[in-house]
Image (cartoon, rainbow, N blue to C red):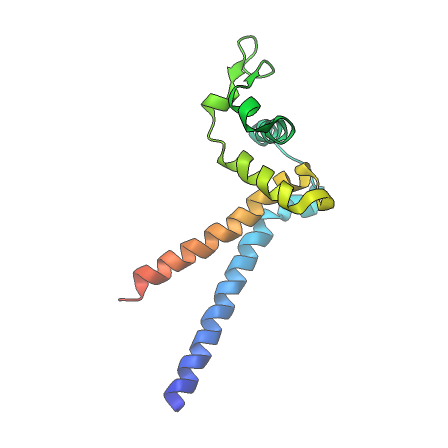
Length: 134
């Protein structure tokens, strides 16, 4: 029974450490939001927000055929066929699931923190899987 208690206690400690690590990963990604509010910083995130907004307002077919004249001036860019749309599609799906409870801007600001926490979970699980046999 002592082994069972120690194993159970160890499992609780490992889970607590894991949850603390995930919380810290989430909290680190929220630093700019806590400091400056729900503001998108830098150029690439603004472009990704514009692409997400276009997808949300016009749908998938229009997004795939979208030629954006505001970027790569004066030539423009065929956005729908030259980007990896995973982040935009994910953000739009999350926004549609949340409805009016959160703006598209807020979803786009928080997606890096949410996905960072999920990535931390999977990285931890891969590390656990790799180290179990050691």
